[in-house]
Length: 128
Image 1 (tube, rainbow, N blue to C red):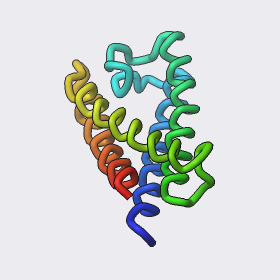
Image 2: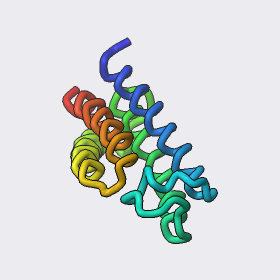
Image 3: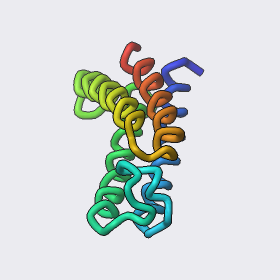
């Protein structure tokens, strides 16, 4: 298996785990310290809606990884797929900083390394 394909599959696994977390948050699970700045144990309605929307985004992020690794058809065309992969790499890199400065210790300890790994995986994808 090629490195880009392995990176895409690992990224999809992590994004699936994050989508499951967001689904639990949307359903009212007391895991709010892991997301959205960690200010709530159970998310309020607006953040539950945001968690639901993030599930859709994670699916798009995963599809982008698969498309970049030629495991799915490209987004519109290969140029759009390449640009989207670089944008997601930058997005995840920003997530390292944002999670790293969170006031929530659980968010810092769990989500910072998670987005660090996603950044590395998308950087591998973007570079190929």
